Image: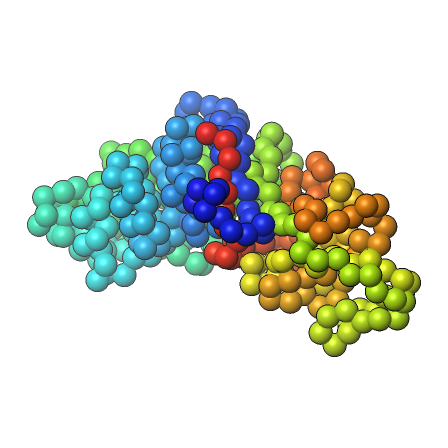
Length: 373
Ligand SMILES: *Cc1c(COP(=O)(O)O)cnc(C)c1O
């Protein structure tokens, strides 16, 4: 969206230069021997996958990963040549689309491998697949049994498909459990590779694992959160910064008397004569309703706590202690924390969820404004 077509002060500023810097930092951390599959599912966690895809590809990503075929198609229409990967399951009846559009598909059954092989032969193409192994998460993937090893060996022999990779996903239940999952994956890979079949890509690590446990990087990592600058790791470190700023500006200022209520059910009452500011964002923009009594915005460098019940489209903040506050003043809702703003991480702690939930619940309503290259 071009900034002069935006008619709203509540907006999400996405800094493409910061995303580029984060991507380069990830690439630098893992070195040349590890490929980076950049995870941009759920519309790049709400930041806009179409807008940020080129930044990722130009700064070291070798694949763009999405969760669903619909997400992949959206990217394929705009970017005919980017390598795209579907992390999730695609039902049989849609597999022809995967083949037609040259998308790499997660596969965990011989049945789907054969189907993709037949479809691809028919249309004269070769579809890449990565085999998904269930090493304990029990979400998606086949268990590492001898039978499944034979199935995978058979997949290597199918025309029309290329078994390009194999992967699993960590439950992140602790170092010991991570190691067990890793060993199940590598053990299974060894059985197959010892028979002469080779996987080009082997992967298990998401953002947290690739920073905290270098051995889990294998030869490919799948970071999402890190790209957007969310620092969820515990042991390791990497210099990534938040690439988003969620901001708005004051619509109206009210001066109210001690004892007066604010908002639905008057659930907040002024303990003193107060100055309050109405801000044009609410839970329909993806701001958690549970922020009541916890949330704050930064106005003129100072914290202004949200008071009363959060509404769908508006909230009210107590600005009594902010000098010279005026209608039209900017308010930072989420930022990088350096200006005192609430980070995505802090927001997730305040409402008792995780950072990916906070960022991807930002709704379609606030416009995304892209700055940087
Ligand atoms: C979402 C997802 C990722 C990325 O997770 P982050 O925590 O954002 O790094 C990696 N792998 C799979 C299979 C996923 O579903």
